[in-house]
Structure formats: C-alpha cells, structure tokens
Amino acid sequence: MELIKLILRNTGRHRLRTVLTILGMAVAILAFCLLRTVVDAWYAGVAGASPNRLVTRNAVSLVFTLPISYKQKILQVPGVNKVSYANWFAGIYVDEKQFFPRIAVGAENFFDLFPEFIIDPDQLRTFKGQRNACIAGRKLIEKYGWKLGDTIPLTGNIYPGEWRFVLRGVYRGAAKTTDETQFFFRWDYLDESLRKTSPFRSGQAGWYVVQIENPMESQTISQTIDALFKNSSAETLTETEKAFQLGFVAMTDAIVIAIRVVSVVVIGVILMVLANTMAMSARDRMSEYAVLKTLGFGNTFLFVIIAGESVTIALCGGVLGMLLAFPTASVFSRELGTLLPIFHISGTTLFLGSAVTVGIGLLSALFPAWRATRVRIAEALRHIG
Amino acid sequence: MSEVPSQQPVVVVDRVSKSYRRGAQLIHVLKEINLTIEEGSFVALMGPSGSGKSTLLNLIAGIDRPDAGSLVVAGTDITQLDESELAAWRTRHVGFIFQFYNLLPVLTGLENVELPLLLSGLSRRQRREHAMVALELVGLSHRIHHYPRELSGGEQQRVAIARAIVTDPTLLVADEPTGDLDKASATEVLGLMDQLNRDFGKTIIMVTHDPHAAAKAGVTRHLDKGVLNNSSD
Ligand SMILES: Nc1ncnc2c1ncn2[C@@H]1O[C@H](COP(=O)(O)OP(=O)(O)OP(=O)(O)O)[C@@H](O)[C@H]1O
Ligand SMILES: [Mg+2]
Image (cartoon, rainbow over all chains, first blue to last red; front, side):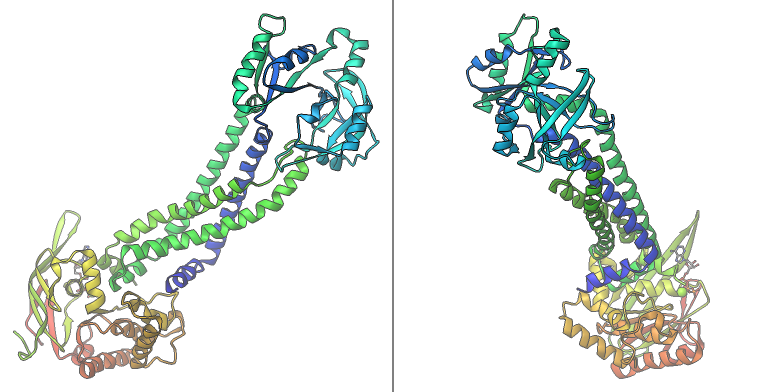
C-alpha cells in the first residue's frame, strides 16, 4: 500500500513532464496498434482461406487463362469434390479510386464452395436464373447505397466495353475476417459477350477453385491435377488457396515490411522518450535514494519504486493509446472501406500492445535504477543543499 | 580516555583511517583515529570545515567505509558486514538527523516518520501508533498531515528527529542539525536532543560548528587535520 502511494505520488510530481510523456506514449501505442492492424488487414484474405480449397491457375502467370474444358478433367481427379471457376474482371466503377474486387464466377456452384459468403437462398436462386445478375458484399452495398434491383455500370478495361449488372443479392461474411467488399457476376454472361466481340478470348477461366475432401491430400491432389495438363498448351499450377493468396500479398511484401519497420521505430522512439523522462526524474532524486538507502532500504526497493513509476506512466499512455485505437480504426475502416476491407483491431494486437507497454516501462527503469543502486550514500548526501 | 567509566562503550573507533583521492592527489582525511563513546553520552564533534567531521560520523553510522582500522558500534564490527547486512544494521541501530532534514517531499510528516518502520515488520496500525508517539514527543502531533514544504525549517527538523527515533535506535547521529535553522528553531531542536539524551538515555553524536550547540552536549571532541584532540577548549 505505502509502496503504491509512494510510486503514484512520485509519478504525479512533475505534472507537465509526466503528462507529456503519457501523451507521447499514447500516440506511439496508437500508431503501433493501427500499423499492426493495417498489416493484419493486408493478410486478412489469407486468414480467411479455407484449407480444403485449392486454386488451379496458369503455370506461366495469373495473367494467362485456362480453357474452360479443364473443369471436367479436374473433377475426375480422386479426392476432388467440386470445381468452380472465376475470372478477374477489374473494370472501373465511377472512377479509378473506387476499388473493390470484381469477379466473374461460375454461377452454378461458385457459392457452394464458399460457405463463408452467406446469401439468402431466394436471392441466390434469382442470381442463378438471370444472366446479368450480380451479388455484392454487405459493406460494398452500404458504402455505395445500392439496393436490390439497381443497375450497376462498370467500364471494362481487361474486358473492354460498357457493362451493366443488376444487383440481385447481398452476401455477408460468416466470420469477422470474411471480406464483405467483393462484387460477383456471372461468368457465362461475360463469356457470351466475349464470343461476340473477341471470340479467341472466350471459353477461358482465370482460375479454378477446387474443393477437396481431405485437406491432408492437398499436396498429392495438386500434383495430380498439374500432371493432367503437363505438356499441354496451358500448363497449370495448383496450390492451396492460402498459398495462392499469399502470392498476391507477396507482391506488396516490401510495403508490409516497411510498415513493420515503422512500428518498431515508433516503439524505439517512445522507449527513448520514457527512458529520458525517467533518467531526469531519477537524477533529481538521487539524494532521496541516498536517504532511503541510509534508512536501510535495499536495491530491490529502489528498483520497485523507479520501475513502478515508469510502468505506471507507460500503462497510462498505453491504455489511452489502445482505447483511442478503436474509434480511430473505425474512422480508418470507414474511409479506407473497400481498400482494406477487414479492418478491426485483433486480440493479438491488444495483447502485443500491452506487452510492449509494460516492456517499455520496465526497460526505461533499468538505467535510472542501476544508477540509483550504485549511488554512494555518503557522496550523494554531500551534494545536498 | 573514557569520561564515564561505569558505562559500556557503544562506539569504539580503533585506528581508523580514511583518505579520498582528488585527481592524482590522495587526501588523508582521517589519520588513525581512536574514539570511544559511552552509552548514554551526548558527544559534540567540532572542528574547522574540511577537518573530517562528517566523514568520521558517516563511518560510525555505517554509511561509509574506512580504509583501515575497525569500528565496533552497538557491539558489531561493522567493517566486517556486507552491504545488505550493513543496511539492516543501520535500520536497527542508527537514527539519522541531517542538516537539510532530508524528508521525502511526497510524503506527509506522519508518512515520513512511518517510513523506516516499513522495514520493521510492524503492522500498519502499530506503525501509525509508533509514528504518532514519536511526533508527539517532538511536539508536532498537530501538523502530521502537512507535507515538508508546508512546514518551517524547525518543524521539518523535528519531523526528521521523529523519524530518527521512531525505530528506537541505539545511536542517534546528527550532522549539523541546527546548521540551517534560525536561532529560535535551533534552540528548540537542541532542547529536544538534550531531552532525548537525558530523559530517554539516547546516545547522540552531533557534528556542529556552533559552540552553543556544543554546550548542550556533555562531551566535546575536536577534530583538526584528521587528528582527534582530546576534549574541551
Ligand atoms: N567523496 C569525497 N571525495 C573527495 N573528497 C572528499 C569526499 N568526501 C569528503 N572529502 C574531503 O574530505 C575532507 C573532509 O570532509 P568532511 O565532509 O568530512 O569535512 P567536515 O569536517 O564535515 O567539513 P564541514 O564542516 O565543511 O562539513 C574535505 O577536504 C573534503 O573535501
Ligand atoms: Mg560536514
């Protein structure tokens, strides 16, 4: 009790210094949490990947497509349950800043393979029955204020032309990590018009999604599928969905690394700030430490009061920063919307934030505590007055 | 050598030397000092500035170590103790009174007096009771919740005296306890120390420049150039 009182009163001694340090700490932990959340958001697609889904794509590059006839052949492979397919459409909605994934999918069973997209059965039936229908994620619809029955125009770039889709369904995610900003329409609608405008591009799937019975067999099944198309004009590369999405993310690894470096730097800076605050306080109080030692208090006691003070300051700032992270994240989430669709602060981030906070508190105490324990009583007392 | 032969010596300083290094130069502050202090005596230590009074007091009180010689204080040769043993020994046997009071500014008078009792294993209530008794004795029971900055110098020194006696130590050491006080406060503080010596039999060693202060003490010793001269002027 007395100890806590002493620590708290020492903390409140240099108000301005303490308050400024707490604010600095809060900003640093806020930044740390947000940066981590950005990285999380980046990898969120991967986190949502299902272990029993494989993706088969053109071995050369994602840019190249595969014949639609592969579907039946893949389906023959033992252990394969279902096969669907999709094409990356890209295109522009209103202007180029409006980013969300737009994908042409095999209407007949694509959503069967993605149970994490929850759709009203009636809406799905309508989607399957109307060639120019589309389904969009909940967040997307909220962002643009779309309603069922609305016509959504896209300007094609990979597939040129003016495209119009009728919104027939909304999906929501089964988990918090499910991306709710995607836009799906029917592959056969795309293919139909390609047959008219550029026939050589028709009958092609961008990639196949392969549902397998047993995730343990993903390795062998992948090899079997790829062996099927060996030495054909379009060889395949099959991998787990997770590996596939990591491939996407890997393109931006440099950015992720940069963000991680920044968050470490932020922590390093605030560590120096707090360590400096603590060093200044300890220097002011050397004679008090000498008095405490004279009375018989040991090094442990000195360490506890110094570390107690720095951990208190760190915790005030850290908790404040983490509390601020929530409203800030929701603003981010609203503004970034579809760019980083899954933007929420994870438990891991909060845990790491707390650990970093306490760690900074303890580390900052080391140097002043070391000095305090080394102070020679007689000498320190000579400097008084 | 002993002034009151019937009494036990509490302090036996035997050929103690202490020197400090200043740059390349070695300053011999204390040269083979011998000193015996009987239990219950009130000793004033005088001498010119820089003569080594504080150094000697610190050695006796176990907050500094000699280069040579032995120091038997309260029955223990404290030169043989390691740091933590010495700290525990100080808690038990020595009460300190400093020139500049050295109270912790974040603690009230009462809390400052309670502070050394944190090391005693007493309960919270017992600590409070002991501290109250000590504060009463120095005549400050009405200002116990004031912080040091809210007290006059004399009052602060009385709180410091309460802190020094609250553990009932064998020995009280005071380094110029009136050095920073006006005349009235100094007289008060000296009266208090005299009372502690006479009524409670406390052994007191006091460093002072002030002949009035020294007059309160039964014994006066003079230090000059590192050598202790036998008694009075
Ligand atoms: N830690 C130290 N390092 C170097 N020199 C020291 C140290 N402590 C004391 N001295 C020197 O030892 C000598 C005696 O110091 P001390 O403080 O014991 O004197 P004093 O008699 O108490 O003087 P004053 O009356 O001014 O308090 C002085 O010359 C002082 O400068
Ligand atoms: Mg002195």
